Image (cartoon, rainbow, N blue to C red; front, top):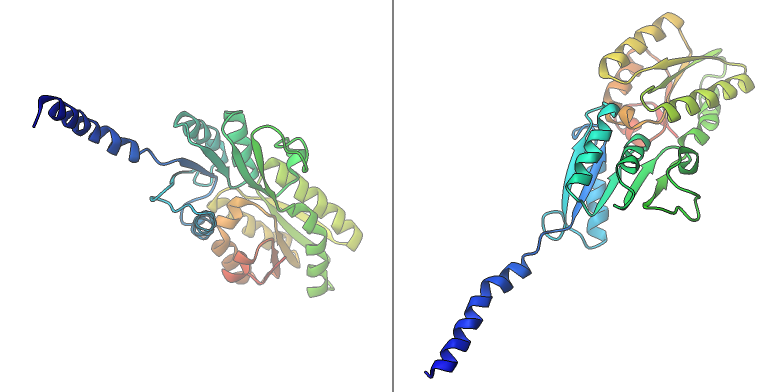
Amino acid sequence: MRRREFVTLLGGAAAWPLAAGAQQAALPVIGFLSGGTPGGYAFLVAAFREGLKEAGYVEGQNVAIEYRWAEEHNDRLSSLAADLVGRRVAVITGTSAPAALAARAATTTIPIVFEAGLDPVELGLVTSLNRPGGNVTGVSNFYTLLVAKQFELLHEMVPNSTAIGVLVNPTSPNLAESTARDAQQAGRLLGKQIHILNASTEGQIDTAFAALVRVRPDALLIGGDAFFTSRRAQLATLATRHGLPTIYNAREFATAGGLMSY
């Protein structure tokens, strides 16, 4: 073999590790930010992965996911969002309004996709529904718009009721205030007395139901909230134990043993 051919071959061989390294580029990373717990949100994570798969992305194969759980403490979301930004994830998904707001406060450049229960314009997440603007977009269920209909269904189920309890999470202030306001309005229209109760921890849920025993409402409405979704089994069990006809905002509560959802 002539010297020139040997040098050429050696040079090509030296480039092989570089070519292999280029083919093993780091996977794009999605930041998954939630105020709930892994166990409570397992069904949503499964749906999230399925949606990614339908779009051609499989976790561990061509995309990675960094999960951040606030473990039912919304005050931790800001630091968790900042951690995801520090890791330079490609996109952040916020599974609730508080998570989306924390992500939005942490970055103006990384794309954010949210799921929220309130009007995202009212929350300040987007400029408008048609043209979100900035780095934020997503989906809203407008939970509070359902409160009046939920009251109607409770009235049909318990027509002679005079008082209805409403459980909200005070650590989701926008959602709690909006739900309480709409519940009071619906209660006035139907001639019902409304009892607003607060809970943001597992123990506070027990305390809230103990308070319901004292005020003795005829029915109960569980406000839409990510924390309540993660505690749906506990809520359904307590409502059944206390014999309270209860309506929830999502079918997952009914499948966990709750009476009905809308």
